Length: 105
Image (cartoon, rainbow, N blue to C red; front, side, top):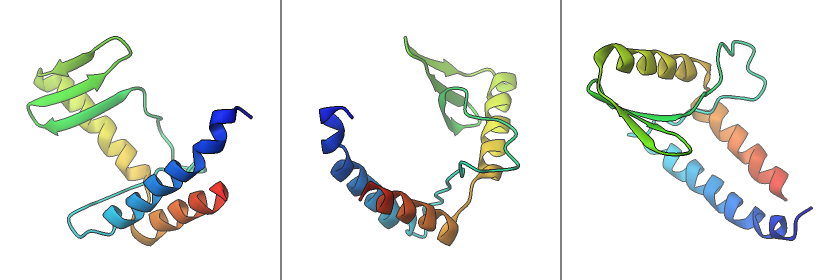
């Protein structure tokens, strides 16, 4: 165990607690893709943000790429929908967060 790892638990628990709080807000839809998802058709390839139907930002190690071509945006929207379909929401998502907090000790 790295010495720094001893100091990670409290911030992680605080972040997970924040997710519990913010995920309960009515305007927030917070989903978690469980590790044991049987329907997993894909995993995240890279970090991306779908801003709307005119822009997707992709975060790479070396740069952020902004995609504006409609056909390419459609690929990311489809990938997002696939990821969203694998996620659990509401009480099921909160239970996973609580389980993670409990595991931190």
